[in-house]
Length: 126
Length: 126
Image 1 (cartoon, helix red, strand yellow):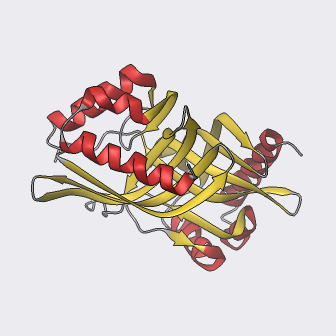
Image 2 (cartoon, chains in turn purple, yellow):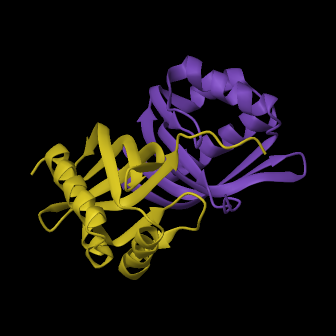
């Protein structure tokens, strides 16, 4: 499966996991030694921490995530995705911003290996 | 030059550009078609926008940036760097956080091709 198709499918699985608040299913979207770099927090490493990270997000009201792929740079077994996202709680937009994800082909699936994003919303004046 | 050495040298050139507020020198640290994804703003594309982005950062008081490479994933002519950073204004720490940079070998140098970061500082309670 080519990287662009694999990333599209991976993002569809991710959207479903968020929509169903399936934190237990999130580690399967990532490689075994994946790292997530969330804004305003420390790096998150591996299945257990990733599941806990998403469980907390769902407890905090996240009900939907809409990643949009703008670019895929293919590098053999790896591919870098650059894109945008919107995160919702019900009908409320919690955040929108930019994503950068290194995907890795793993056992027939493309999975997230290094995953980060940041908000495009301006900070309130401090 | 291997990726790890090239990234180290690229980061040294970046630190010098920040320390000397050399916004005009920043595009040479990036590939011609580079994208920067800064937090709390829109994506920045190409030399002119990159120079303007860093000029604004220097006008806003940034006097030093300290990137620290924690990991380099080599992928031929590309390499992904994951790390940490501290940004200072004089002796004051403005921000510290995490970086994720896709570097590309370009004309003998390793240059930043896709560059993003986010803060590890917690947001004030809203």
